[in-house]
Structure formats: C-alpha cells, structure tokens
Image (cartoon, rainbow, N blue to C red; front, side):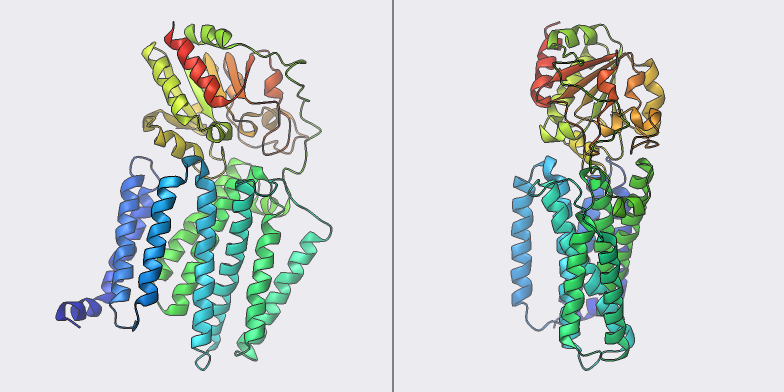
Length: 467
C-alpha cells in the first residue's frame, strides 16, 4: 500500500464527514429547480468520496465482484438515462427505491451469516430491522412500479380482513424478532421468515393504495429506502451510511407529510383508506361529450386566446402521458410573443410523483420564474382571462371546495374555475386517479377540447401563429 493511500485511511472518518456535508448541501440544492443539477453533481461527488475511501480502506481483499457491480451499475445507469423518458420518471424512482431496499436487505443478510458467532443484542436488532425495512421497501416499490407502469391495475385492491391480516403479520414479525434477539440469535429459518413476511407486507401495504395517492407512496417508499440504508450503516458501523440514510429518510418523511397536507389527508388514511376505489356519489355527474358537455373547436379556442391578456397554463398527468411538455412551452412562448402574460400553475400532487410537473416543464426549458406553486397562483385566477387545463383532473375539481360528500372535499386545489374562461384539454370524460367525476367540465365558463393533449396543443400553436 502506498504512503498516500495509508494517509487517506488515517483520514477516513474525516473524508466520511466531508462526504456527509456534501450530501447535506446536495440534497438542500435539490429543493430548487435552479440549483438541482449542481446538487446532483455535489451528491455524486460525495458518493465518489465515500465509496473510494471504503474501497481503499484495506478491508476488501477481492475486488472482482466490486468491479463487476460497478460496471453493471454504470451500464444500467447510462442506458436508463438515455432510454427512460421523462414521463417515466415516477416508475424509475419507484424501482430505484426498491433496489435500495433490496441492497440493504442483502447486506443485512450477509452480515448476519458472516457474524453468526459475534451476534450481540444490538447487532441482531439492527440487522433484523434493516432486513425487515429493506425487504418491505423492495416489494412495495415493485408493486408501485407495476401500478405506475400499468402492468397491473392502478385501482385499490381491497379484501375482507385486510387490516387484520397486516396487523397479524406485523405482530408475528415482532415476536420472531424478539425471539431471535433474546432467545436464539442463530436461527437461519426464522431469519429468512422475517424477510419473507416483510416482502408479503410490502405487497399488502401498497396494493390497497389507488393511483390518486401515488405521489405520497413514492415519497414514503423513498423514506423507507433511506431508513433501510441508515440501519445498514449501524450494521456495518459506517458513519457515512448512517448520515446519508438518515437524511434521505427524514427528507422523505417531510415530503410525505407535505403531500398529505396538499391532499388534506392523513398518512394513515392514505395507507389504510383505500382511496380511489370508485366514483363518488356526491360529485356532479359528468355526461358524455355528446350530451350536456359541449365540445369546442380549435378555432373557438384560438379566438378566445387572441382576445386574452392573462393566461395560466395548468399541467396534469395528461400532459405527461402524451409527452406534451414541449408543446406546452411552445404555446406559452407564442402567447408571450402576442403580448399575453403567461404563467404556469403547479399543484404539488399533480402527476404521479412529487414535483412531476416541475421536472417535465424544466425539461422543456420553461423559465423557473414562471412556475408558480398553488398558494402563490390561486389568488390570480380571478384576474385571469383563460386558464388552460392540460390533462389535470382531481387537482382542479371544484368538488374539493363545494361538495362535502366528495372524498376529496377539503383537498387544496387550483381554483381554475375562477378564471373568466377555462379550457380543458382531455382525451375523454373519464375520471382522474381519485375515480370521481369533475363538475368543472359542466361549468358555463368551461370549454372542452377533446383529443390527445400534444396534438391539441400543436393545433393551438398553429392557430395562434396564424393570427
């Protein structure tokens, strides 16, 4: 070993501390679109420091599998960055959360087998916790991925005695854990049973959660993956993992809480309420486009836009599904060229993960200062000539303000109905993730433009250019 490497090993704890500080700074910078890219670079540098000092610490005798893992991971990362579309980011985040949980569970299992003769009550406890949280995170994230990717139905899956079964599994796992810690630490079959029960729980916890709650699920699973990493840090006595895992776990919990506040619901209601099981009876019935709802033409919409002075664009998951974010920016740019004041209203749970709309609009180079959050933009709708709703549904549903019988009553929404004219771009009259109808579509000031969002927006751009 070179003198330089030996000196680095002597400074290992200090290098871990520097890495931890860089992680804190990086995560902080991720809170703003303007600094997010730099935050990613700083976090990547921190990970390089942490991995590098670990590799040269002298505790590793064979680098074959490490090199293979680095190569495979780098290949997957490069391919994913090139091929995975921005609209599929929620699925990828869910999958990465699951892989983080699986890694923690595998490390815990490896340490358990390696230290069968050295198990203390503390070590056994953190190993079991890491195994349990990691395994649950893995299968829960796989289910979330399958729902987001539409490999399985996004509707809640509920069955009799569901909560009782979950509670029984949790109590059973706790009993096994106490037995392994206090009575018989070396018992591989029961150790495997903990992982198996946790994986079953991961599935059972996520399947009753409907598509409307996916942003909350993604944030919560992200927190779980961080907690699993932190527990793995205790298993390995690695300060960097403890700090980084705690950061991710805590930030995920705070984000989960913010998502719940944005939906006016508690985390317990999200996890156990089965939200989105069916259409609400209290919301006004939305009829077929050929019935009470009158479709408007592109020409009608262009004429309204030509006469407007203030326009607010309201993106939703429909924009993501049709990959229309660039068309949204084109429309905004053309309206600005006509002297129209244009802004973008962002609801915190629009889409399928926290910040979904911000990510897509940032990809299409919409200026950051035009992206307005709900609290900032809501007072402006009354002075707005046109609010253009692009594939959003639940986050603009007036039932949240007006219908006490609606399951989304009390949920903060974007008050688009207060604009002089509301243009709604939708494929059909199908309800949103919450499974309820939207009375906005029946309002006298609402113009329904049916069709693919991207195609409709492109036609609007051509119409505006022709004026």
